[in-house]
Every structure is written in C-alpha cells, then in structure tokens.
Length: 211
Image (cartoon, one colour):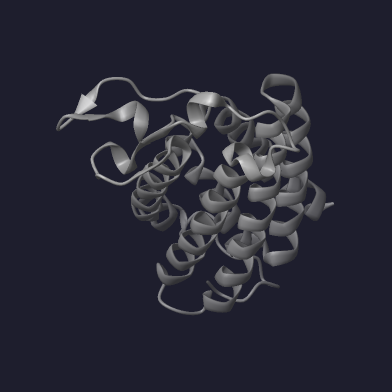
C-alpha cells in the first residue's frame, strides 16, 4: 500500500513536468542577449525539464531505487500518452525515449553515490542524466537521420551559426541542444537548494540506505 501511495504521489508531478516540457520545447525564446538571438539557443522546455530530475532524486532518496523506477515508468507512460495528444508524435517519441533512458541513468548514478556527501549524488546523477537526455531528445526530434519517426522541421535543420555567434554553421537544432544543455546544467546546480531544504522533511524510509 505504501509503495502504491508513494508512487502516485511522485508520479503526478513527474507526468505534469514531462507534458509541460514536451509542449514548451516547441516554443523558442524571443529577443536578443549580447546581440545573440535567443531563439537560436533556447526553448522554454529547458527551464521546466530539470525539475524531473529533482523529483526522481527525492523519490530515490526517500523510497529507494525500486520506487524511483516505478515513478519514472508511470511518468513515462502517462507523459508520452498525453504528449501524443498535446504535441507532435515525433516530439512525444523523442521525449519519451530520452526521458526513460536519462531518468534510469540518474537513478543508477544516484544509488551508487547516495552515501557520499549529500550534494554529490543528486548533482552527479542529474548531470549524467541531463547530458544523455539532451543528446537523445534533440537528435531523435530534429536530426534528419531520424526522419522515419516523423517529418523534419525545416527551421530546425536549416544551417545557422553555432550558438548564434560562431563562424561555423550547423543545423539550428544543434544550437538549441547546446543552449538547452547549458541552462539545464545551471538548473541542476540551482535545484540543489530545494533538494537540500527538503532533506530534513523527506527522510529515507527505514529500509532505505541513508542518502
């Protein structure tokens, strides 16, 4: 009963984050920063998706890897199902694949480091998960090689200066991936603050090793 209840408690925000990120990743920032067009760098999904790693790490800390994996699986199924309805099928497939692999890696890394200094497990886990997740998502969602999943987005594959400033040109989705990765890494560091604040509230269950 406890396992079911804990899974539901954490699965609800997880599914909401996945769906919101799948929608927001289709919208790019407007305006410029230091002469760089933000639309060439970032999607709004970069600001919401890192919270998924926070949810996973808090679940893992409190209930252990088995429950954390259940939360990921439930979030994956619900999130992808709703994403097929709310966003493009290719985005839903890319997001679901990247989410599942990235989150499961996060759980494995966190579990290996859970008895280290409190910040090492969530930081290392989220960094590994974020890099893999970002690479998988943007490749599957926009790279022409994966066009069998769905049609290419012309704007995404059009050549443009990398990060909007470098002389070397590459498909625009590569700049989106790099820009999103920078924001997600920064967010992963910032999210250590709520993780640390919640440590005294969401304490590990007796059957879970201290983290």
